[in-house]
Image (tube, rainbow, N blue to C red; front, side, top):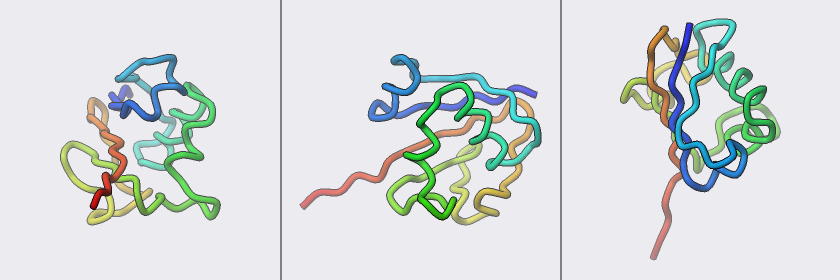
Length: 93
């Protein structure tokens, strides 16, 4: 099972500059995908998840265009061939 993960510019220091990674999670869930992503790019999970293991407020994650905050969060299914996007929130004023 292979899933494509789009990496935002700010997190590419963890991926040696790669903007896309292909990972193979052990289970078809977002939580398992983040574990596999951490194995491929150590340190990235701490930028996506907070100390309690929940998604950080300022990081949006999409599985095939669906915001996981409105689906099942870390339990969101990630099917084979899915595209996952990690998008940091932008603030301004």
